[in-house]
Length: 212
Image 1 (spheres, rainbow, N blue to C red):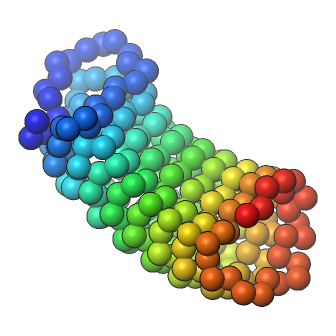
Image 2 (cartoon, helix red, strand yellow):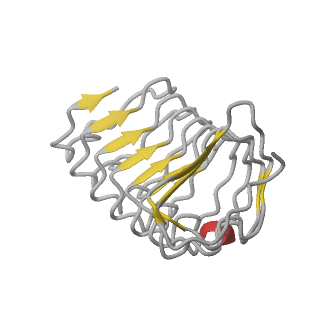
Image 3 (cartoon, rainbow, N blue to C red):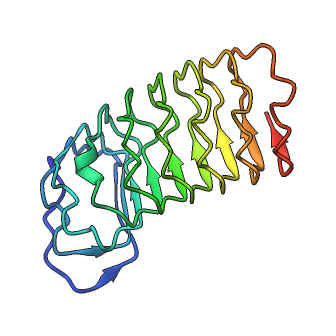
């Protein structure tokens, strides 16, 4: 397949539409690929996608709650491509080649509960990247190339329960970096180059039960 198959218009609500690579490669997602469909969860997985048109998801704005784009070759994803999907609760961009995220990439998505960005090439996270994610429960950033964490960058994640930062290039943790994460239960910092930890680094994390 060179592109997403053409779908006819339907008034049926589909809880899930999955196109998964099993020897199939779809390099591009064309404009209006799903227009005329009502889909709550869209899974385009392991397809080798490297380009997504600005209007690829047009028509899904009111309905889509989950977007799975994992296991492809995406290096850059334009904000405009997904910014109208305001009801997203899950975004899966793991196992791609993403190296840079616009500072306002997640700003439109205040309903997000889960963000999976692991196994990419991300080197830096801007301090305000997650400023609108007060409903986030899980954030997975392991297996990237993140070099530093910035003071205050997680302060808005007041509902987060799991935060995975393992297998990056982080060498130090700013004092108070986790202070606002009062519901945090699982934290993974393994396989980094972190030396000394600030003495009060986990003082506010009373619910922390798993630390690597």
